[in-house]
Length: 192
Image 1 (cartoon, rainbow, N blue to C red):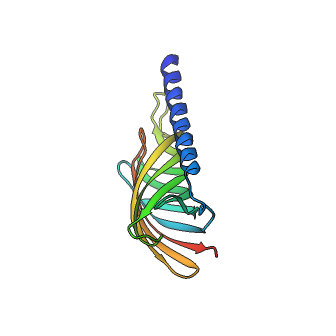
Image 2: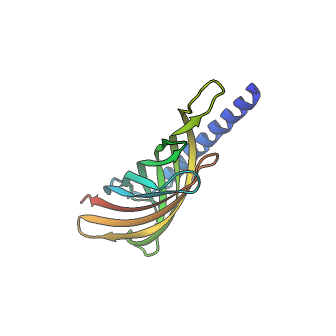
Image 3: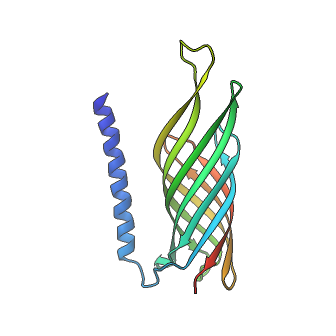
């Protein structure tokens, strides 16, 4: 059992190292336009793919500009919340995550339709019913885990003089966890 746990921990470490190497390699090949271009907030609906009811999502994100020709870096931090009823108990699912999205626009400027990929580190807290042999009534138990997730996203960005608005559906795959779909609307302040 201990060997299996060490093997799983080593796989996690290798995954994190690969992510850091990938992000470092992208920064090396970045153009001079990498800077803080905007900061914004998004909010929307969370659509879990399995056990939970629909919930909500909020996210703070910034645009660091073009890191590779036609590819833009969007670091973000967010929160998901969902719930469900089971055995006359209200259970909750919450997820704090941070990561980066790499998006490309379908025209030569950062506006209009876009598509991209994301990578996030998720800290998940979910409640479960604990039905032990020595309990007369089920109790609620918290289970916490951390997982690396990958996102596939698309959307539209309307850019005005000092503000931009976005619409973004995203599918997030969390290996060993709950896959999620989010549909978000956002607004960002554009720095001069």
